[in-house]
Image (cartoon, rainbow, N blue to C red; front, side, top):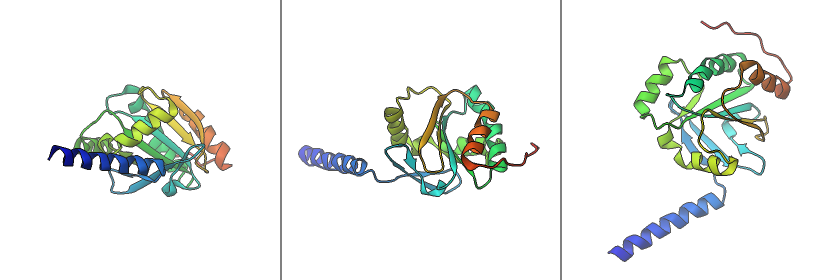
Length: 179
């Protein structure tokens, strides 16, 4: 029985390694019921749901002061750059999904959020590929073709983030008043 179990585990591991080697899409379920598909490329990430948009991919936590300070900026920017900017926040402090959903609702987060429980493999992939040691917030910015244009540990000011979006979309958006 032990040999059968070991054989099955070996087959499962080989299958997941083959899947990773084939560079298949990782499927990340968001808190709002969407599925985001992500595949590594030579220069970045392919995310079909965000095709043609500047993408902010942030690894963050609900107990991280700079992460919390970033949320209102991202909320404003998603409104301001609708159709030009996509945001994916991956919570990495392992907050239970039900609490994370309540947190996102309370903060009026209007962008895609994925719980760590659903993104562990992808978090490990990014950590290895980017040399990220786990400090948060950790932000990857992708151009509209999916190429990584910057990686940043720590919070970036909103005007810097807006400059990046403007540089890659060629248009300045109208300002959005915060309520």
